[in-house]
Length: 115
Image (cartoon, rainbow, N blue to C red; front, side, top):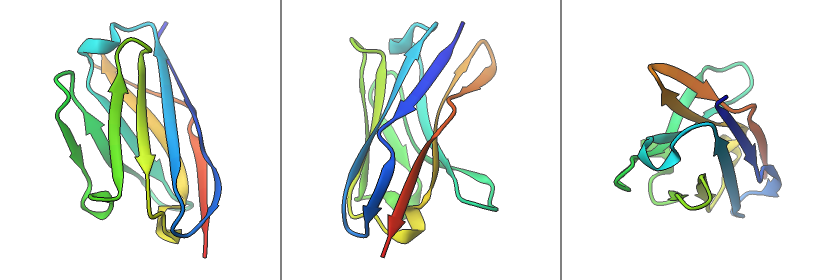
């Protein structure tokens, strides 16, 4: 059974930082591409960042130079370090992976940034 469990969200002031974690089980984590997505109230779920099995990364333009995705294969965990947070980053953040052609999602963790 594939499970993804996010943690690390919270309420912060603009300019502060948060680090999200997503612990996985049920997959051979080290071979899987892992992604972070976010969904703001009333909006669609959007791509934020991804990291491949070889460690290569990509980001949506709005978070480049502020967010860093990383992984620890020994702990089956992917991280999202978020710096210089702004009100526009307020959303529920979801961890995602694909296994046997099916997308799996965590339940999400809320990030709220106030000015």
